[in-house]
Image (cartoon, rainbow, N blue to C red; front, side, top):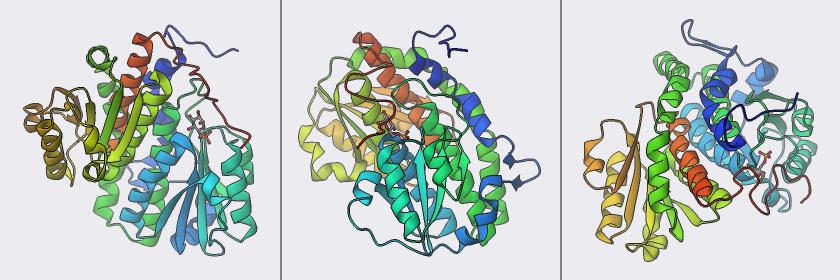
Length: 369
Ligand code: G6P
């Protein structure tokens, strides 16, 4: 049967609202928080190779590349294995040093992105182990991988990726936890704690989606801006990149994502009373640092929209608009903090009367270079 919008105006918003279910589906059958167990059938045979990997290289494009950047931080933290994240199109053409002992993780919603496919093929020829993290079952990338894990987000129709991204984050987090468990690089207590955090994440995503009406108002307030800046640190830095990408794709507003501390090396020159700056500033190890970055923007009269952890009163007193998401561990925070940014892009696109499901010049899957 044809995939329907089931009452939603667009596929994009339908898919945004499916995320409590799709994240749950990506964890189901793998994570058992009550028993404290994690089963990753698709990588079982490769678990020992993975824990001994000298290096993990993640190759991807677009939104999947952003999921890879978050996975880099998670894997290095939990597994203590060096990780590189490469744009597939760069990796394939630059004669990279890769071979036996390296593990490549190809991340792709469609499993058909030409650059990602060729990048993994050449690494495979050089002796690397290839894992695929794909959404489309039986896709080319899935078939070419030695092992992998499907994201189980269901068909994604909107050109701008939303539910596939959060499912990628969930699955990449599971892979990191599995490798850390095998390797013994995580304590039993932390392992259990993160299983519990993952177990409760889809409920927190559902809570975050209740911000819908508030975000629509924020969208209305800023929809005529010419540029946007998105800033984050740590696990939320790639979320800032993803927020900027979503806004560009859907609303055609120029947007840049940056690590918040790096803004003083360039983007701060753009700040004036007309520039909305979105801070992804949930409570984590970098919290105090990002608060001072917010002050730096306010001192230059920028408009601050902040995604914060619920109950945060200090940022509320500085920001122009505050969007509160439930508290969670910083490793899983991107699955929550990206939701308001997806909705913001969606509503700005809708309020501008644009075709949010099929933005101009973009393709759902780029199967040619
Ligand atoms: C296109 C899509 C993006 C997607 C990217 C990578 O640009 O419009 O939404 O993130 O390709 O696609 P993949 O299927 O490999 O994740």
